[in-house]
Length: 99
Image 1 (cartoon, one colour):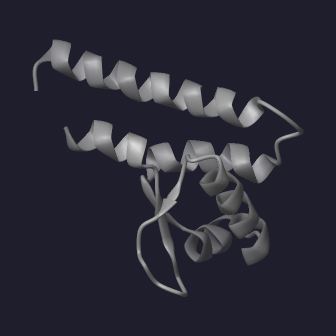
Image 2 (image 1 turned 180 degrees about the vertical axis):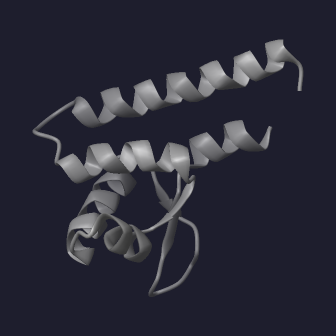
Image 3 (image 1 turned 90 degrees about the vertical axis):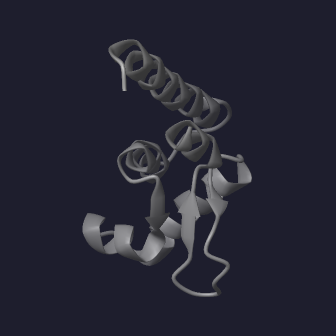
């Protein structure tokens, strides 16, 4: 990857992070777990509420609630098709990473 191309994708990812941060800030108070999830999806684009709850030492329902908020906002989408141990991803971020 050329330096210019790397810089282009790097900037697109930073811009998307800023867009997501602004999107969650519109409206009421934003729970800390939602802000933490925004940062997490840029570290690990596919996330699991079960694994994050264990890693962050937070109750399952706290993480799940944050994920559901982001899902309602269109930031995350459930991608596993499972009833349990669901996986979520940001399609917008994956689109940048896959190109």
